[in-house]
Length: 247
Ligand SMILES: C[S@@+](CC[C@H](N)C(=O)[O-])C[C@H]1O[C@@H](n2cnc3c(N)ncnc32)[C@H](O)[C@@H]1O
Image 1 (cartoon, rainbow, N blue to C red):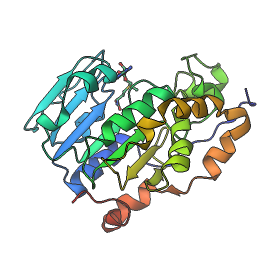
Image 2 (cartoon, rainbow, N blue to C red; image 1 turned 30 degrees about the vertical axis):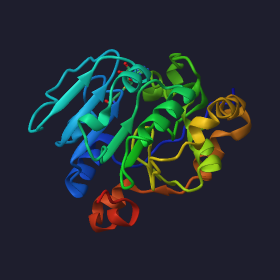
Image 3 (cartoon, helix red, strand yellow; image 1 turned 45 degrees about the horizontal axis):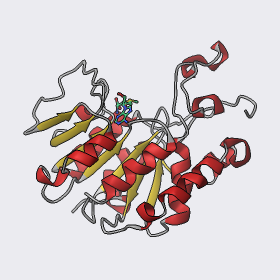
């Protein structure tokens, strides 16, 4: 493991940024994998579909929302047995992938979600800008007290999906937002008809296995990615459509 190093996202809390997205882009539909307490879905007021094998809702996630659908099953089962288009006929406007924090799971969630999207949908992914290498382990291990607030944080190795998509899907538009605590990735210019990821899934999993933070390095992960300031976007909301638009 590389020597401990703490890098911090300077932006606004991701749920505050989502509230801003909800208010400025006015999505009609929201699809979420990984809901847990309900903090992320609560940022949106449109109709929502939430998938999580173990909901732990502790807040009102229904307030003001026309429809909310909960599926208490793993995302792979959800995709195998359900059709999101039966609820969102046009496809979801906004998606948030925040389920199992292992790269091959996120890759499958991305592939399965993209095919249900429309051309203007935006898929957000969580936990790209990790603060230290311990957080990126594939199992959740509690850190040492020297990590301070990060001691219990776990992003897993989902960071790997971004370099993979950049390499194999150069047609996608990928932006990084510096939202606290661990960043948000926004993927647009989606192609619901794309089958390339599905067709090369097993080779892509080999690529994921071979990506290693020791060689890729945490610094490169931070330095190689053009990071958009979430604070600036919220200060100049008219700029949001330079980066994303759902209509
Ligand atoms: C980090 S939490 C989600 C937090 C939530 N999105 C928020 O922002 O407050 C991750 C969630 O993913 C769920 N999860 C784990 N494995 C999953 C799977 N295979 N499919 C869908 N969700 C999964 C866990 O039960 C957990 O509630």
